[in-house]
Image (cartoon, rainbow, N blue to C red; front, side, top):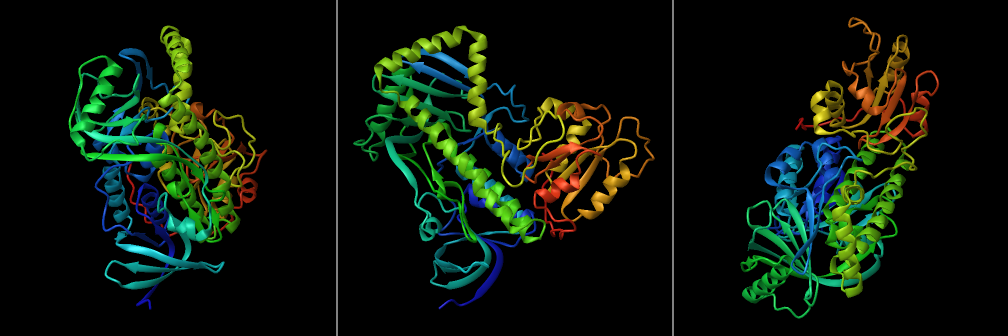
Length: 555
């Protein structure tokens, strides 16, 4: 029988990147959280390796990006070889999707989890290791979960919600009866090893040889690489590390046409690629995120990144419902927004997987010709680079049709559903307005950004009073506003107008920005009412303010 009973807002099962992100964001928004994991302690080996631009932006808002960058390695190229000949090097072109983080960061998942765990502890939540979820009941008003610890102690926990972030073999998903749909595809081998070669570590390398395709991905440490072998790996003796090192060295040498030495790998895994997803990410008071909801090929390094975005999307919605800022129907938008992302990801990773191993010799010959053309035609190469970055970075991800989005009544540079912080590091450095807005976006909660004209103050102050517990109202004063004019709500300075120019906002424009930084609605003061837009999104005036415990700082 359970020895004790406890109550919390959310029970998070699984302390990987998705679970840690969920716990951090829930606690940062003022919810009480329990975070459990059946393992005895943190994993010592790394599975995921790459973090893309949108994830780095998210970590910026969470306050951990500085640590991620300090321990990771920036990569901004993809170089393709075939049978000893370099075909093309693709560069990171983010010109169509401005960001402060125009690169991918390679960092061991074990390191990233440590950084996230430390941030979660700063929010008052610790990981309860050796704690297994053995069962739970959802009665419609909440979840009662039974936990078992490694020392045979048991505990009953009552939570308003349960989040399953417990990976591809998720206990939560299985007990909810959510069947993974999809298929298994190819079997690949992954090995982490010291590699001695002349390849610069600022690129990922794709090498096609007569023995199949091999990939090289740099670790933060100098000389350490992840090697991916995509052909004839089923019978490989992973225990014979010296023979495996010789096999990988032979393939890499044939790929780049240069001397290569591979040391005995420190970690090896042979796995069958799964391309599966659940039909729903919510069942009553229970949710699944990350690998518990969708698993796919590691070819484009999207797993960790997508799990982080799942968790971020869900956390602020649970907080809004918990504190009465929005109706419980808001939670239906979680699956409505994230399931299409998972489905699209399966399609794209399936294509990348086929392209990566590329066993058809006719297709390989065609590809060699195509890459030669791309290498020699600059504008065409740039177009392909922008398309690659848009798909991989998640910067183009938009939520235009879900419940937390309304129509647009203003002609802005940002469309409803898109992320608002479309700004480069150089633009941030040059603009007090952008720096102020980015600081606001690091705070939990909704933001109404109004570019005021003379006479707009009373209406904006009334709105701030009506929705003060639901959203923050920040006013960018008119260019001719007097410094002593205090009739508008809290000011957000934009002395040079660079923020207004970047957003395409004129005096009278307003933007209603979701807690995850995506634009929910926009309009013109006097024409479209921000209060009506907030109401249409399900926000409740005079909602209770959460007892926020945010400890994030600017990077």
